[in-house]
Image (cartoon, rainbow, N blue to C red):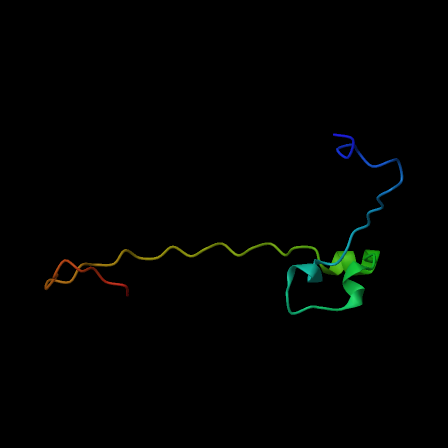
Length: 70
C-alpha cells in the first residue's frame, strides 16, 4: 500500500500538444512539443456538414427474401 500514493506537488507537468498525435503515420519528436497559439487556431475543428437524407429503398417485385445492399 505504500506504493499507492499520489505523486508529490510539481512531479508532473502538462502542456497542450498537436492533434497530430492521434495518427500513427506521424512519428517524430515534435509530437511531444508544446503547441503554439497559431497551431492551436489552425487545428480547431471545422463544423460538420449536415448528413443528407437517403430515400428509402423500394423493394423489388422479385424479392427472394435476401434484401438488397444497394
